Image: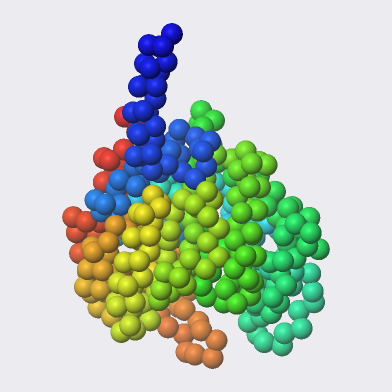
Amino acid sequence: MRSLITLLFAAAIPLAFSCSESPSPADRLATKETVTLFRSLYKLQNEGVMYGHQDDLMYGRSWWYEKGRSDTKDFTGDYPAVAGFELGHIELGDERSIDSVSFAQIAEQIKIHYRRGGVITISWHAKNPLTIQLPDTSTRRWSMHGTAWDVSSREVVASILPGGKNHEMFNTWLGRLAEFFAGLKDEDGTPIPIIFRPYHEHSGSFFWWGTDICTDSEYASLWRYTVEFLRDKKGFHNILYAYNTDRVTSLEQYMKGYPGDDIIDMLSLDMYDRGEQFVPELDTALNFVTAEALKRNKLTALSETGERRGMENWWSTVLLPVLNKYPVGYVLTWRHAYMPRGFRQVPGMPPVQMPAKPFPDDFMNFYNSPRTLFLKEIQEADIYKRK
Ligand code: BMA
C-alpha cells in the first residue's frame, strides 16, 4: 500500500510540473482544440508574428462577398493567418452586422478559415444599451446616438450589471451573441476555438465602455459578467478572451480595469500610426505589454494598427522593426471598407479616390520577411495539431 501511494505520488509530480510549465487558457474546462490553439500560439509568438486582417474574407474596396476571395490573397497569394470578424448589431437580432455583412456568411467564413488551419478573432461594437432607448436629439448629420460611440451617459455600464435597470435587456443581448457562437462548429460538431475581443480600447473614452465612461471596477465587472455568462451559463469552452486597450504610456494605465488572469487569455494593444510619436510609443507599450503577458502566461497581439497617411514603406521600415523586438503573436490591420464607386467621401471634403491596389507595394516586403507568418506558414506549424 505504502509503495502504491509513493508510486502515485511520484507519478503526480511530473504531471503537476508539466501542467504549470504549459501555459493554458484561463478556462479550466477549455476544449482540447482550444488548449491546443492556446499552446501553439504561445509558442509561435516567440518565433514570428502572424498577420491578421479584419473582414478580409468578407469584402474589399471593390468587391463584396465572393467566396474564397481575400484582399491579402489577391495581393500576396496567401490568406492572412488571422481572420478578423465583427459582430456589432448581433445584439439586436439583426441579420446583418454594423458593416452590412450577413452573420450567416460570417459563420460560414469562420468555419472555412478554421478548416484551413487559420486563427479567428472576433470584435463587437455593441450598441449603447442605455441611450438606444432614448430619442435621438442630435442635430448633427452624423449622429452617434445609441451606437458603440455614444458616450453621452456614464450610467450605461452600471445599468447593465446585475441590479441595473437594463440588466435583463443586456442578458437578451448576450443571449443573441451566444446563439451565434453556438453555431460555430466544425462538420463533426466540434466547437471552433475563437479569440473574442469585446469592450476593446478601454484606455480611450470613445466607446461606452471607455475609461472615463465607467469606473475601473464596473469595467472589470462587465468583463467578468460576460465571461461567466458565456462560459458558465451557456457552457462555451472554446473561447479565448482578449483584454485590449488603445494607446497607453504605462503598464499601470494598461492594467486599469483588468478583470483578472482567471478571465483573460490575451493581453492585446491597439495603436494606429498618427505621426512621429508612433514608433517610440509603440515600442514602449509593446515592451511592457508583452513582458507582462509572458509573466502571466498570456498570449499577446497588436490587435489593431494602421499605416501613417501618405507614408511610403511603412510596413517594412516602421511596423516591422518594432514588431521584431517583441514576442507579438499577431498584428492585425483594419477592414478595407467596401466603396463601390471607388471614392472615400468625408463630409465637407472633396471625395478622395481610393487606390486600385488593396495594399501598397511595400506590403510584399512585410510578407516576405522571415518573421511574418501568413496562412501557409501556420498550416505548416499545424496549430490545431490535426496532422
Ligand atoms: C470602425 C470603423 C467603422 C466600423 C467599425 C466596426 O473602426 O471601421 O466603420 O463600422 O470599426 O467594424
